[in-house]
Image 1: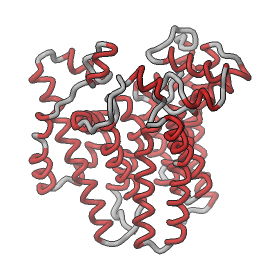
Image 2: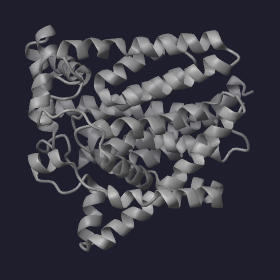
Image 3: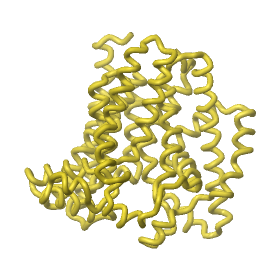
Length: 404
């Protein structure tokens, strides 16, 4: 058991170093003029929607607005704009502040789970190096506010704090509704804990808290008559129905592997067995039925042939489709081996009728792969919030025991 003194002696120096790194990170970005540059990508319509909430906030605007994402980010930016001004640079400063606290919270979460200051610092730095994190942490997007609340939710689960869990879960999904995948993982985890754990009442309390956190989103679904505002669905989704896209599943396995490759590679290298490798190889032809590709709606709306930075780089660096898909197939196969490793570890936990936080981490990864292909489009950037989960999973995999 760590004493408070030992905890602080290891945590505080790591935190101070991180504060310095984050300060330099944003100072360099500001020095390069990010506050004054024109709108970047979808930032234009996100800012307009935030200003729309400033002008006419109420049930009417909540019932319908020109976005497919849930409204909390626009509400927060509208409040900030009301107090400090709606100039683009001012709105970006608010997003930088939210990202700043998101990075600090990620560090706290990783340190509390690993008790390793180096791992915590390394994980945050690796996360910050992601090009999507850099972009969405300085420009006005919905991703980093959602990530901030996601980390707060993870901390609430780890520390078994039901009130904080209900609040953080609600806030997370009110930023981006696809984060419902995490609520499914949490409910599954506490359902298992309630069945075989030693603290069944607490597990039930935490499960109820998670369910309570879904209520505000449920109210919005009733208000919208669907999973997104009608106006936003018409503008961005083409008004189509919700189906499971198996091609998106391929995309997410490939790009999760790429964006978390150091962690995935270490886990596979250390823990893969011939049996798991053969099983992965047998499943791998799935790729050729559903190869990496952009979504049809994305191509129709903006003419993009790629799903993000990595896809674009490989496609244009290797114009031959055989080479392009051979590269993606390799990453797909490595990703399958990683998934096979964590399936085996989860099986051991369940077989031993034990409860381990490792189970939640992996339920989150599988829940992500289950939920995300229902989306109307596929983007690489949706993978970046999962990077800390893959990092923590790898850390747990490498420990002598993952069951308690």
